[in-house]
Structures are given as structure tokens and as C-alpha cells.
Image 1 (tube, chains in turn brown, cyan):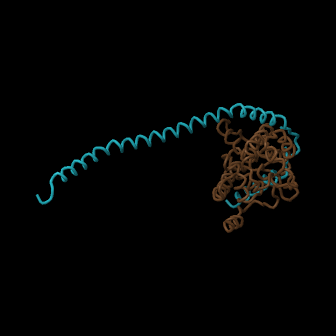
Image 2 (cartoon, chains in turn brown, purple):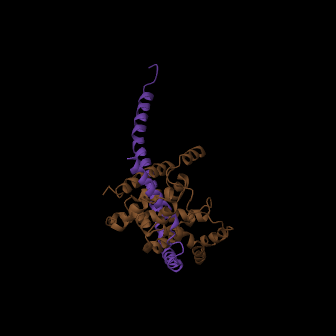
Image 3 (cartoon, rainbow over the protein chains, first blue to last red):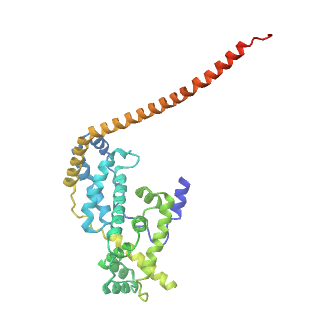
Length: 221
Length: 105
């Protein structure tokens, strides 16, 4: 197991600089007061669950806020806590409560995109403003110019546009591995999928994203 | 082609950095405590109401399973029993026939 994990981590998808890993899923160490709290909730003190929500709500909002449209964040966060409540019996303590909750949040967001994929109309096309931004970005010469372009709203919109063209599976893996910067092993744990599945998905998702981006480059239209 | 790949890599890099630098909703005030607790309480109430029926349901199924098992066993026993007298009768008839012919006569 450890050899496979090390090998996969070593083969970690190359190309994108992953040094700035997102910390939204990072484990914040509490002095484990939740063990006692969880036990009380399991024994029937339902009202104590409100304390857990208040404590972990910012953590869940950070994760969900990056994965679903702004208008849906509240609903998804609500679903995450309801799922957590009914899944408390399955929490063994093998991982920290933060990480366990992060897994539920990631999977709830994945379910959100699966449901939306079935009902939603195809994503709208990019505007001329977006295409002009891409041209400016590609012609940026210095690092400062390049950095300025990342701060533009167009960057976030183009990314959202591109992600909407991915399947929910590819989107979930690409977000975790390539954008958040998590290892394949960590992504597999959070999604509850096998290592091999996530590794293959990560590769395919990256290829799919590159294909999508290649269509919006100047000269491709 | 190489130029095209460079452009894609550049675009990927800028989108990744943009993703990491935008924490749009991180500081957004979202409070779901009330709504979650309302759902949790309602669900607990429903669960409490349904529990006796669930126990009854389980009891009915278990009783039905045990009854079915007993019926199968009884049927098997009866089937075996049904064939036994016939073979027993044949054996006793042969025995009687052999006994009626003494050796040496």
C-alpha cells in the first residue's frame, strides 16, 4: 500500500505548479473536544449538534464555496451537516473530524454537479471580453503583468466555464488534484474512490481540460 | 504545435493561480445552524414515531421466516415418513417369507 502510494505521489500529475496547495481542506487541529461532544450527540443529546455546526461551519463553507455556484452554497452546506448528522454512527475517529467532514463536503458537491448535469442546459459561450482577456494574458511579458491577469474576474469566469464542460467525475478530481493541489491519495480518501480510479481520472480530466482550453485560444475559433 | 501547447500551459497556469487567489466565499456569512437543527429535530421525531412500527415490522418478518423454516422441516420429515412404512413393510414381508422356509427341510 505504502509503495503504491509513494509511487503515485512521485508520479503526481506534472505540469501545473502545485506548490501553493489550497488549505481549504487542511485539518485544523482542535484539542479534540468533539470526541465528548460526539458521544453526547450519539447518546441522544441532539441539541449539542448545533455546537458542532457552529464550530465547523466556516471550514465547510470554505470547501463548498469553491466548488459550487455562490447561490447554492448555503443549501449545500446545509446538506453537508444533515448528512454528517445521519452519518455520525459511521465516524470511527480513524481520521480527524475535520477531514471526515471535508470528505462529506466534497462528495456532496460532486453529487450536486451530477444532479445538475442531468437537468441543466449547456453552459453559455464565452463573450468577446473573455476572448480579449485571453489574448492579453497570452501576450503578458513580465511576471507582474501575468499576475495582474490572474486577479481579473475574467480568469475566474473562464475557469468556471471550462469546468462546466467537464463531467462531474472529472470536475471533482481535477478540482482536488490540479487546482487544490492534493495528492492522488488524499483525493481518493476524500472522494471515497480507489487510488487507481482517481489517478486515471486525474489524467483524463487534465487532458479534457486541455482540449476545452485549446478551443478558446486565439486562432482556434 | 509547440507554440499552441505553450499557450495552453500558460492558460492553465493562470487559471490555477486565479483559482487559488480567489477565495470568493471564504468569508461569506452563511449560517445553517437553525435550518439544519430544524431538519434534525423533525427527522428525530419522525424516527421516534416510526420506531415501534419498525420493531413490529422486524418481528413479523422474523416470525414469518421461522414459521417458513419450521414448515419446510415438517414437510421434509413427513415426506421421509411417507416412504418409510412402504420399505419397512417390504423388508418385514421378505423376512417373514424367509422365516417361513426353515433350513434343512
